[in-house]
Image (tube, rainbow, N blue to C red):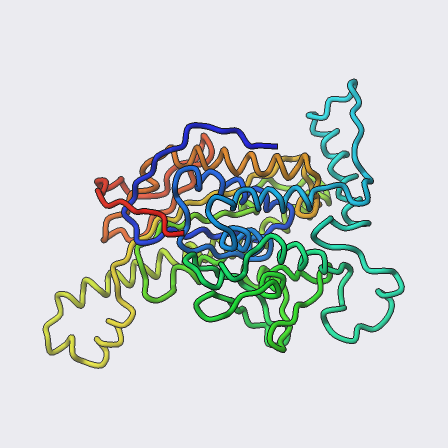
Length: 406
């Protein structure tokens, strides 16, 4: 299946770097692939891609392939994992059934999710035997419902890790240290990345096992934080950044009417709340850094040389950032299994929605214009018709242009 093609949007912007931030969310992750496809068509290749969980897998597929091959590799991965396991649970065509009705789609999705739960996802994970589940695990990498040996083989086939470690695109993936509980980023500026680092970022218990990296065991980064926003924007040296933050869980939702709805809503709040908090924290922190930079400029020389002023100067800067949010809005029929319902119909639908949401977002040119230095940070959510721009009035466009380095 190919996504809908439209005339590419020509982009100009005056930022030092473009960052693509990919949240965790399992089967919802094909939405991120659609987002990337639209960005690539608009010549907005990221300089830095960072991900958590399924976002780490998509990030590796992007950073670990040549520019002209990235969409094809993403498609190959999502086509493989959405193949019917063992050829079962494929829904036959019944002309008299309207598969677009919510009730029918919900039943179809649940049956496919059941197939995934029982037999795993091709190229991704497979269930352990009942006997293996009842025996004590010798090491933490055996303590799980599913084995992810398939995923390691898939990553090593589709991702060029030599390219990742050579650059020029920076890659960061987040994971949680099982023993210390600390959140850790594996980053190409500090680590030699391999398939284990990517798997560690997506090792969500009890489904998936802890992954050993350099003698330490790691679980899914989403246990601590489901967004890499802070890691990217707080990195040194700070730069003017155009950040595309792709969230697979929507913080906003309706009051649940039944137990299934309550489960869905709890999962959405749990995995989206840290994203919202991280964005708010960064906006506040950057305003403080800008205020400090402005005060230091007007400070008498003798005060600027004081230890206190030097301490403030180390944190002060006037860097600016646009955070462009692309948030997947799930359908009512998707239900509580939406993060492990890997059917081809659904992953294709997620991909198409991500692509079209990004086209609509990029049609708003103000998202690509740097904010005034006194504003610092602007956030945008432009993908949907009723969205409003969360920003101050748009500043004048800059003539600075950028060529993709990836």
